[in-house]
Length: 407
Ligand SMILES: Cc1ncc(COP(=O)(O)O)c(C=O)c1O
Image (cartoon, rainbow, N blue to C red):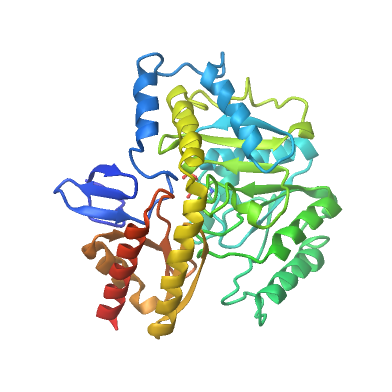
């Protein structure tokens, strides 16, 4: 028996794009997901993997690359928001965050990383240390190598500011005045790791000034700006990468989840001139299964599908559709406080008292969605970017029915 329970009493047997079916044949709309931008069993991904598995099951890139492995490196280098990028593969988002931090330390010769309360970068050593959320905090290695600052919340600013811009300003001032020179000497700061939208933190979309301010602080101190796009990458926010909404160029980009149509793959993309050689990475592989043949094929098929089916645009349009419906619910129900997000990353903040009941009620009506945030009261609505207008409409009416039931 499972000792740690999943959020739903469900055994999944199949899926197609934004829909999944359980072992009893019940259909669900999957708005919980993030492991794949395309959702389940996208035909292009299925075909690529089927064809590939008969040729190679898995030759490690540590020894020699395959052709698709090299091709994907080129594709990723041209897609990521870096002027000239190098790419190294890993397997999970956690590992890629970890490697990005190791790279920042290696390239700068410095030790300390600044990250943000509520962040989630993964479950391995450095990634965990940079994820000061409850639970994680208890098991993360505690050394003086991480410092933390608040992340802007435009609905309820942790600095008690009146509006979003002021919130961002006060946090940047806090970093300049209270973190730098107090918690860490500026010349010891190796990197700043940040999510363009905090997902586990509660679907928090910061104002542009925040990421721009972090870029300035990185430039002033000589630290590197690491953007964690594990959640927000590959079209999910209505741009290829979340950071593109903020018009900021990072130094290092962490990629995962949506990169390979559901197969395990992650990557670290970094400015080409950051290091001449990286002791860890042989031939661009950070580990035996990094850049796995089948995952790389799935990733190439994913990129092709996103381009050919205009899925970045679809993510944006479906996001507008969701946002409109969710904002109406904020007006309509007095226990629904805020709706926010970009593209297919949307959140609905509800009263703590009803959050758990809401998730259960949605599940019973056939909508999978979980809660995130400090008090687990932000309903996270992150459908795959293949979601259709009709499916979004269906999800919104399920949500409205559940909220009405809880009124
Ligand atoms: C922003 C972010 N970074 C890193 C990770 C870790 O990825 P993985 O679960 O593939 O290790 C996650 C997972 O949810 C994430 O959302």
